[in-house]
Amino acid sequence: MKKETVEQRRIEILEATCEVIIERGFAGTRVADVAKRLGVSNSLLHYHFASKEELLAAAFEHYANKDLADMQRDSASAPTAVAKLWRLIESYVPEGSDDVEWMLWIDAWGEALRNPKMKPISQELDAQSIAVFEKVLRAGNESGEFHCVHPRESATRISGLIDGLAVQYAAHEGVLKRKEFIRLMRQLAAAETGLSPDDIRDSRRTSKTLNGTSKHSDDDAPRPASLATDFDLRQLITMYADALSRSEIDSVMRYFTDDAVIIINSADPLTTTEEIRLSFIEQFSANELIIEVPLVMAFFADEGNGTAHGNMTIERRQSKAGSKPVIDLVRGVDTFRRTSTGWRCNQRQRTTI
Image 1 (cartoon, rainbow, N blue to C red):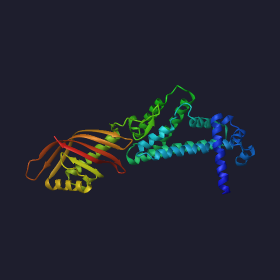
Image 2 (image 1 turned 120 degrees about the vertical axis):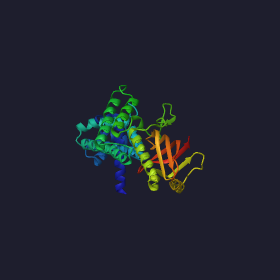
Image 3 (image 1 turned 90 degrees about the vertical axis):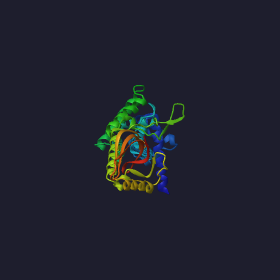
Image 4 (image 1 turned 30 degrees about the horizontal axis):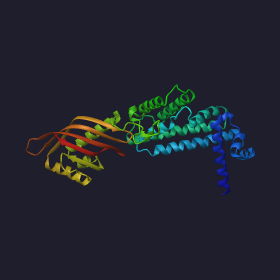
């Protein structure tokens, strides 16, 4: 119990110290100011911290670790790597030139030049910040959302640009607007991940307008798929068409998610894996060869949510033994969802023209 009491007292001291630092800055903060804020003697603070330098360094470490933990929790709850990256960027960008969190960070960098106790803490926190971005970039590579060649270097550049722009934004009011700050961050994040700037978003996120009402932080309308997503979806469709022409049922089924739905013309929807599988088996039994040739394909994606759809016009040829092939022109929309194994079709609508 005594240990818990000592730790609780230490946290109270650190939080009070942060409050004073925000008001007075590191250079203007005295041990006496913190003691007065807490209503205790200077000697109590010196019991917990040997010097003012140690107190200031510990207070910044306490504050910054809480700040980083909050951002990581928020990012981790996002549904995709793209959304995780955007939430990190959004969390790091200052709310305004008077953002107290960023004022503390910027002041801490200056204090680290003077305070030997602060320097290793500042360096460690910067390393943690880079590591957070690196983790998300690597996760995006693994999920197929990103094409990031050097995640560590990319994370360093993203973190470094945020830090540099934050100093300009906070120290020189009016020189850089928050909208421009975010635009520049989107451009860099897109360049580092192989996406377009418009893809760096989280459409499930809501933010506050100037009058306090909630709105989506980005337009929810799907945008043209990024080059990477467009390539991946075309590859998926090529794999599917090849499997279809060879009547390989297991390979065909890999095109679809487990909860996929298929709607063909006015027929009843196929809503289970078993129904979809049986439908293809029946087609293979009735035809010697089935070939689908996409004539037109246009893909749109919400990269942040990991969803996409393709508008397609397809030439479909079905050949029965001893008969001329039947050629149909089909118009359709395939809807896709990004899964742990890549993009998969979760809904298909086809209409014969």
